[in-house]
Image 1 (cartoon, helix red, strand yellow):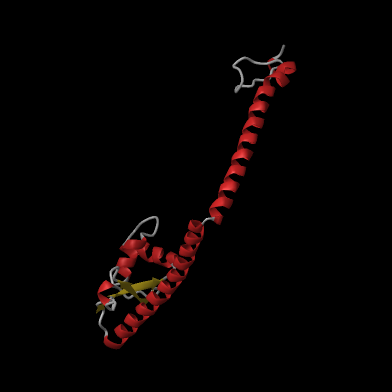
Image 2 (tube, rainbow, N blue to C red):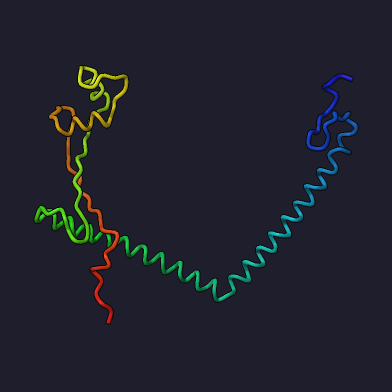
Length: 171
């Protein structure tokens, strides 16, 4: 027989099988698949039963309540942190003071430019290269007046991670 007439079932045997033995060779594998499917179905049923029991327990309800409360607290915390940052930023704009007991104001210079123009400028002698070295270019551009670069200041506030000193004593 030609080699194409044989089907190799490597998971069952290392020997090539003639086509008429194909069904006999695959049958045990199909039985194993059926067994595993039944086992999987049985454990899914067990899981569903356990989930139902868990949902009926007081612990499940307590955990659900904790999650809901944490979600609400997280939203309130994010809003209050934004308000605190804005308050520190307003104080900074009014006084120019960057340091505050709750955090610190950070100023960063943002550059806006066309990367092609920056590469052309660099190629004319400042930072020659095949591609734009963004870090080197921006470091230089912050201290130079280039007509194709616009600059603006971005102000952000970094809050202290521990603000416990600002807690009011509990009666």
